[in-house]
Length: 537
Image (cartoon, rainbow, N blue to C red):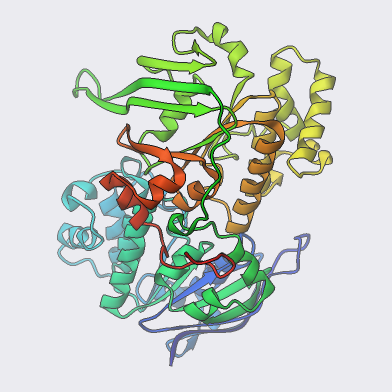
């Protein structure tokens, strides 16, 4: 018998939305001791379905159908009854732990709050520390006193899991709990969820857009598109023999695992256009009163990128990848080393002396929403750089329209603001802004890390097309080794500020020399699964 039975669930959207229903006639079931992965792109209705189960839908969204749980229809329960179930019988891990955790409460107090609300706080701090230890957090007593911003992304996600499991619920809902986490942290979270689920016999409703995650942990899979369940069944059947065209399109968009990549062509590189030699950047924490400590973010990094080449810089969060990229574009000033562009050392240059080079080296930032000015229209954002370098405004705006067309957006979209675009569209705007300066070198910092797999494939294809058409050289920063294997001619592996290994992509991934590289490769979710549209090795 199913633990959770969703039957013909329909959730109405407010008037004026792009479609009448967020979820339409959806039926799903979760068995005790099993993991159901719900897969689909942003806007497919996955998170709305989870919110309906938890009774957390906005007032403007009305749900109909049936959500059966432990003999009761959750849609018929009042708020008091739902509050009793939340946390106690149904736990939820939310998608973004930094926004889900209260920044004004210590971590331990937030875990204890779950116990307090249900009158279950026995043993006080000891129970909180026990829960933190259960999710493999180090030094639970110390972490319980920490604030959320003191923790890494993976640690914050573990705190969310501890809160969700505090009262040992029968059903756990995990809404994209590993999105944008680096590959090793992602694997740790997935193994933790699987281990806790098996040990406690819970049913798990796991929402994701990553088929690698599905291959790693799912027992059953349901695929959603535009609010409807278009395919469902055992994980292996859906992964290896997808029936619906939408499922096949999602599977086809998954990048190859490195060991299943076809041999890449030799790099198109000519002479080195960008060379970094022994670059060092140190940050300092603390004050003169509490004591200062040095953190070497980049420690003697040496890489070269040839003309027309794509060099992938891979590693976990905190390894120094983004700091190194910011050193290249003069957003961070390294204390030593050389950053040579066409033989000229850029590191000693003042800001005014650096300005001519900024036209030739541009950056695509990781988060296109926070890096785009929310108060300016997209055409003005794209035209801003050329105008600052003396291009007449009318010419810059005309070029902005051309660039929007180049990145496959309607030129009329230039009159809109960033919040009016989807994540993938905002990333295209960020690419257009970088291209507005006619650069020779593009620094792409995690440009697809939080995008749906199909949008990710579109952005990667766009970058490859632009590189071929415009002769761009790229430094491509990513923590996703599948993506690096797909787009990079060579890779450099970075750990704790140090480049520990580099070489041609097939060579590094087929025969890694450093233990850290092997660890990254072993942590790829669903590594043994090869999408059926791709040839097996």
